[in-house]
Amino acid sequence: MKIIGIDVGKSKLDIALLVEDKIRSKVFDNTAPGHLALVEWLDKHGILPQGAHACMEATSTYYERLAECLCRHGYVVSVVNPLQIKAYGESLLRRQKTDRADAELIARYCERHKPPQWQPPLPEVRQLQHLLARLEAIQGMRVQEQNRRHQAEGDARESVERILNALDRELAELEKRINDHIDRHPDLRHRRELLRSIPGVGERISAYYLAWLNTDRFGDARQVVAFVGLSPQHRESGSSVHGKPRICKIGNARLRRALYLPAMSAIRCNPAAHTLFERLRSAGKLGKVALVAVMRKLIHWMFGVLKSGKPFDVQLALAKA
Image 1 (cartoon, rainbow, N blue to C red):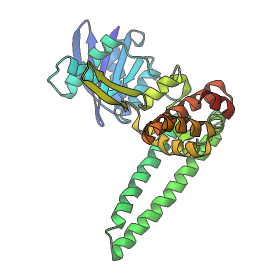
Image 2 (cartoon, helix red, strand yellow; image 1 turned 30 degrees about the vertical axis):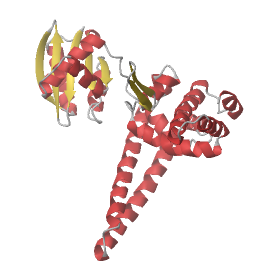
Image 3 (spheres, one colour; image 1 turned 180 degrees about the vertical axis):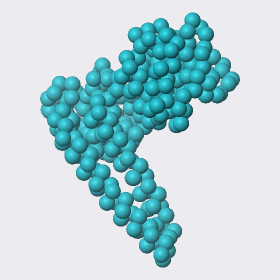
Image 4 (cartoon, rainbow, N blue to C red; image 1 turned 90 degrees about the vertical axis):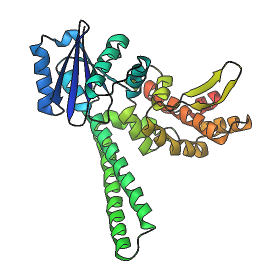
């Protein structure tokens, strides 16, 4: 198996082709023509899709077009968490930090650990991801303008207010487009209805789940919890180290943030979530700990309704709370 390590940047791709423990390096533009040039270069060197494994980091969204291009041409593609590559480099006591060295490190990691194959999302899911990412960007801009409003006066204050009004209109338009996009695709619409059968789960978290937590990607709900970064992390060693358990946070921070308010809502309006929260509080758990437990339970419920294809059963959830 030939290994292709790819360090993905905003404008360029550093390639490390690993063949029989020898590295061949090359740089391409991170553009559609550059992606095709990479495929032609691999073909020129006799690297056939059925005998090659390409690996890259999940660097922002810069990797997406390249990964999709390689998949279309039949290559096995893996997209790994950058923290895994960093930890692997530290385990080798690696001292160099260049794009070329990073590409070789990714190739070595792929050869040793054989990461799972990445599957490109469906076009409608990809579009939903982009709409939600844009929504988050506009929300961030609105927070910045709100912070400036407190210090602005006179004409400057009026300018801030105009920008805030424009951002509010754009947020409303994006939310409408997200809902319309889901409505236009029967499978997404059906899944959203299943998710919204869970009290506390609204339109926003449903859209996030549909965009990034496709049930087919995960074998069980615990894998989804780990992906989001809500798995408990224990800190104990010998007789002297007894740290407080925390969530590991090695996961998708965007989804953790998105789950916070739905969990608060579920505690108020979902009897099963309320029962779980109060039981943990009665057992002496801190409110934040109990809230995180509800966030995890929401993931289990959302995974369950999509996996079973049946709406949420509050009585069944109460029996297990």
